[in-house]
Image 1 (cartoon, rainbow, N blue to C red):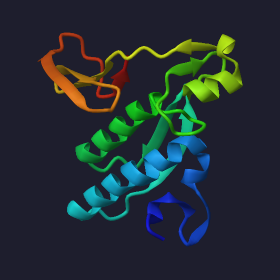
Image 2: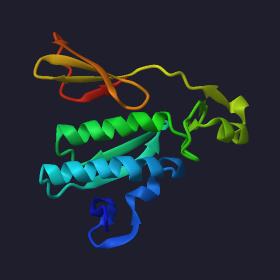
Image 3: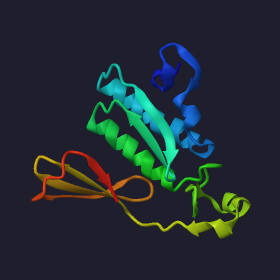
Image 4: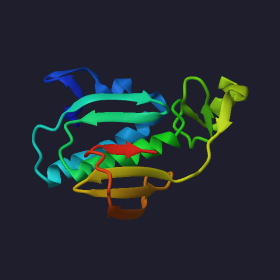
Length: 166
């Protein structure tokens, strides 16, 4: 298997974590994310990388893994952001977001779904806050998941070491 970490259990390849990814995102995940992850795993000689869960939630890709390195975290973050702007049904650029069950949709899929149940997606920056070592780091990304800016300030209020998304 090209990406063994996709299998649910060792040696069982009939179903994979990719089965839980919306069809429209699979091309993005397979052609981009998996290739980048495999390259990073090979470059850093990481053994034992595994997925815990992959799914769609609140209109974006959720990828829970063994969290090996910051480089892998950055790859996952990039494709999480890209999923917000990729139609979950067909993979075209998303311009709408369904209400209720939130999914990013292209013009065609939004029309089929019923545009009266959708709102336009605004192309605004995506901001992540990272807390740790007494600092607060703000990472700002564009809709392609590209890092636009980073600022770090002394964090007077210790919020723990978890990532926070706004």
